Length: 351
Image (tube, rainbow, N blue to C red; front, side, top):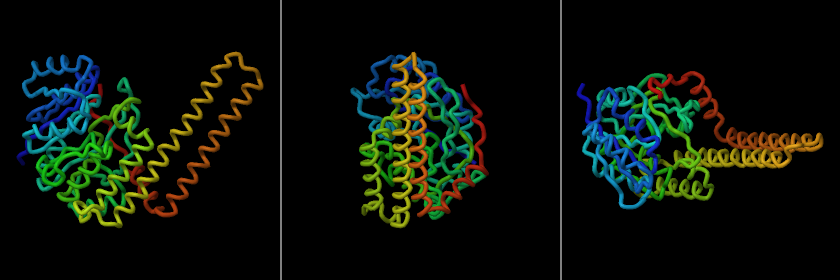
């Protein structure tokens, strides 16, 4: 089987510290990409110097600079327009791919050339690369597979969104033909919509193995927007409206959109509720720190405050679970079975 050509687009803004490891992991892949297009989005650190140094060592690295900071999706769309490969992978400058990622993904796509994309499982890493566990995305199959469009819809309805963006390799022409690119106004849902549209139009491949890492940073793009309650709510609603729009309504039946909404609101509520509880615990810790020489009464009072906060947190979580189980108990059972039966393999490449 002849594998297609692959373009890699790396969007960077002030990640000079992580760039060498991120780009080297791409260049060290057993399956070499046709080109590595690095879009620097007006960085103010020494990112450009780092990229130029790597470009001098490897001719497939090409640097393009935005005159001013335009945002990650502007850079992604620019990379999409510059790319020439049959397939395209969008990489973050602060993350790192695992050994064998391109080879395994492109090999499976060669077996199923009709597929619009291929995705895998994702590992979380910390600021210094420490293991933070795998992202609990649905494991839709115990073996590598291809899902035709009708199966993609059924699986999305049954298990929910499983495309981990850091592991998605797409057919470039499918993105351009079916979506025209990313919609910046959707923020962290921009790639969600593109992935679903391409998969529902062309079908999708899946590999049940960890093949990339996602570095979780407090000031990272995803965390910044996930933690903004108003922005998260607005972009989720806008994404749902687009699913119901004349352009995409045929792809997203109303039954699926309702399930998407219910699960999405649950995830949104749970994420921000956990953050609220954590903020309360942080406040108690800071308050306690103001009294370094605590009396017995101080210690007892802080212990009661912490206990009340944790108890309130459990009550709130129980309520949210109750609401979820009421409308989708079979989904809860399927997801738990999926996680327990199909634990991901350990990444083959970590530094």
